[in-house]
Image 1 (cartoon, one colour):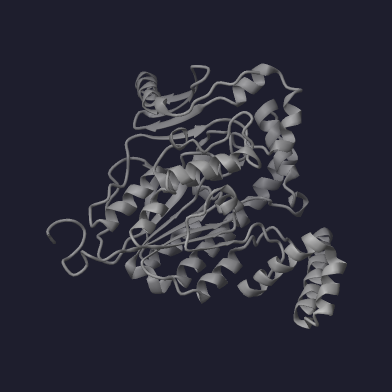
Image 2 (image 1 turned 90 degrees about the horizontal axis):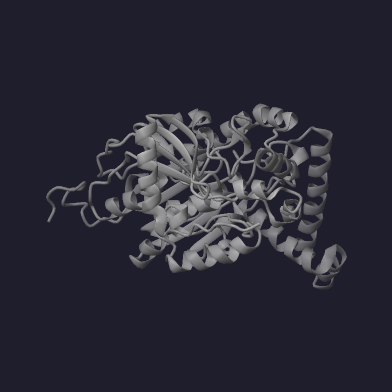
Length: 455
């Protein structure tokens, strides 16, 4: 039947392309550059809430429609992001069939994952794709995607055989093309580092978007397709002094475990984050313009996985459950045959994204908006190298940090509740209603994995 729904008889059997562009670490209050999307037919939605304060659990919620305590892919005591979480994420994503990605593949969609963030790579179980591109944090400017591929190939060879043996191999094989490229990349890398050291070049601004733009401009996507993109220009590091992110991690450790903010880091973040956010939004708009030929037939969702704290309640991202970290921008371009739905609730949780996609794919009216949205944290997201510092901390500090905490957004106000300690850390609004709603939600999430720790 062609009656009702969101489509006409001519379009009812159409399968829309689906694009999700995640501008990693972009705060809602620094996203004004996305206003340029209105000219491309995008609609802005208000009060979007990220389900987690950092990348991996938030992205998994985005594709599965489950909160972190439900899908189980999140930080915990003894579960480090650079070790145990890799295996855990791989196992859970496989069990969940990669959420909406697996669903659409089963329905005949081609799927593409194009990311500058290594969390969205096969290393963490994102293996359900027709094709993928993971650029990682790249601080050397490449002219094209092909040049980037050559650099990656050479980097692997140098890692396995060293500079001299790699060069000798090219000479022996008379492969002057690759030898010439290797020499150019070596010089380019050294010049980049020297320029950064002298302060004449900031390698932290561009973090892979130009490679993604070049890749997408040359790529013919097989329709119908699902395309997940992550760009990192709004993410740290925000200074050449922090290319290894030790400055970030140290400041984050002190803020989380000791409750002390570094004045120097706050100053750097506050002065540099705005220009990174502007560059990120400009890069996002460029990517959408590259995809312009697909827009009429596509559902395009532009969002952030979380924001960034700039001394306003903490520093960096992860652990903290603060508004500036959890409120994210949300813009949607609906397929040409769909009338943009209005928002029906005061908030939008990113866990709604799969249901919105399913509704459009099934020619149904999507629900955009909820009366209650939550975000969850389970502790520190520092890599395993910091575990040795934990032995020097009081047990009560570890118990406080590695606790399941929930921030609840409702019409009556906002509350942050520590599940393990059974106490409210913050209540702003109608206290009675917030406490009642929060406890109801905790019962709802009770089937999830909430494990107390022993120290």
